[in-house]
Image (tube, rainbow, N blue to C red):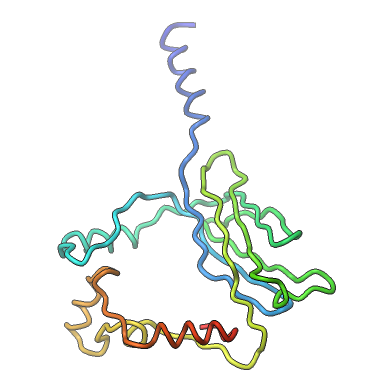
Length: 195
């Protein structure tokens, strides 16, 4: 073997052991006393600074562009676990995953204290911090609130043309919350009424 062949073989060996940093993002976790649903996505990890109130327009536009462009992780193996139940799933071609868990015989999720679903990577190609989430268990089926964000949770002036555009380029630190909405939603959640 020549020295170049040894060098290339070494690069291939080292490169095959490198794993990409990824992030497991849970979009929603909810359910009834009998079943819990969970969905999310696995994305390549990107380091970012937290938004600030004094971020320039240019910085905010770059962040928006970065948010719109993401690198999904297809076909990654994940394991999920809820109590004694669990299995391995795979992300689809867009990095999305879904889990549906039925309560074990004789058990109701609403009677468990803060049932937690944990997710972790079982794929040697990727490094991901394990994550867990407590699903919102709706004990009663009489009320659920589905809320928009625009002019309901934060002021966006969505019906005001150019005012709306100015809101669109604001970052999270610059948005103005509508007074009292977070208190209302928290009190509804505390009463097992998901929002």
